[in-house]
Length: 83
Image (cartoon, rainbow, N blue to C red):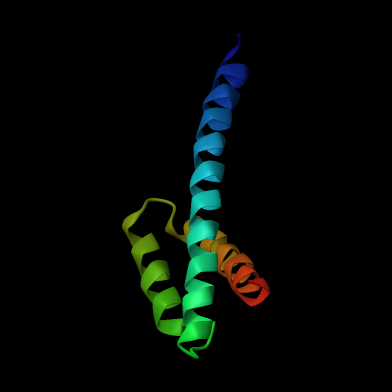
């Protein structure tokens, strides 16, 4: 196996973990959406999003993480609306 194949195998293993964790996160998001509806609360929570985006600042690739999390937020809000 050459270096690129080895690195891709590493990325594939990491992707599998990320996808599994995101799947679990989206399950929790659906539960939060249901709880928000029961409490008559808005799906939008700017303070929560700000908190998570600020947490990205602790990592080396903070801007890339912020971009990813913004996409996660949009998907999460769509799931909350659909549940």
